[in-house]
Image (cartoon, rainbow, N blue to C red; front, side, top):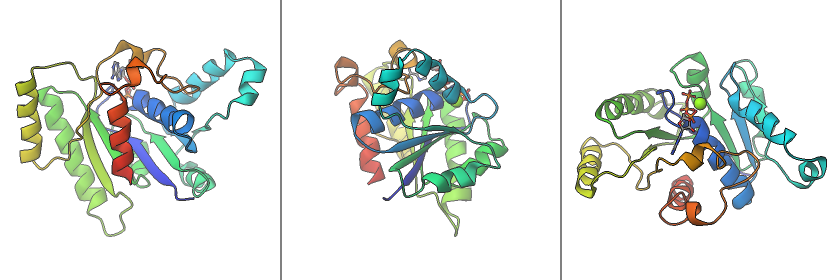
Length: 226
Ligand SMILES: Nc1ncnc2c1ncn2[C@@H]1O[C@H](COP(=O)(O)OP(=O)(O)OP(=O)(O)O)[C@@H](O)[C@H]1O
Ligand SMILES: [Mg+2]
């Protein structure tokens, strides 16, 4: 099986990396039938791992057995490589959730990731720091002879509706600066941080999943990975 190692990552704290890595993992495994493992590299908080434990407590034993849950592994600098090797070739996607700052865990994790998706908000300062992060990644990981990293994509998360022409000016700035911005955006929605951030279930295929919501985002990710 060809395994892809992917991550929603960025150096800015609280921009939605963990939330979207969980939502993506659940979509890929439960809605699209892929095999996924989620690596929680956010030592020592391990918030994804802890979340799964809490979610499992709410399930009864029968439900736990019936459902094929994707594994969530807590990894450290010492175990990251072995954990990747344990799943490589056996799953379709290894999704890594890295910490929110450019620390040693993050740099180490980045050595293994093949496709990076960087979320950011549409505030001027955030755009500057995100493009700096993009350039750092590009120079150190993408344009490196022994590179593992194959692609980097940027997208807006917590997107609040702004006037259409304001948004197209923003987009143009990215194009002018040669920054690979995704077409789809992830809106700012309370529901994404509540019931939809869930390691046991995908987002139900109703209103919140539809054409104006997360579906185009998932579709674009799948296209970019092919
Ligand atoms: N699209 C969204 N709509 C609404 N809330 C969101 C969205 N994305 C993320 N959030 C919320 O923003 C907060 C920060 O998200 P999250 O913990 O996923 O960020 P992070 O980048 O992983 O942070 P850290 O750097 O601390 O690891 C959380 O409360 C989360 O639910
Ligand atoms: Mg996080």
